[in-house]
Length: 39
Image (cartoon, rainbow, N blue to C red; front, side, top):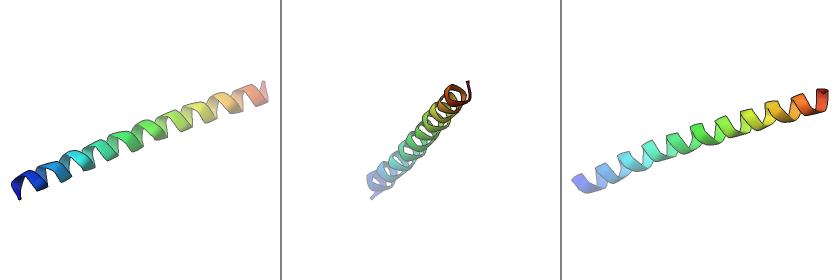
């Protein structure tokens, strides 16, 4: 059971990191696209 909790914690941390990374990529790409359209 302890291993199960640890696995869940690692999964949650990985999920948060993945979401933050994806959000950073999307916002960065969006800003670049907007700049290209405006420019």
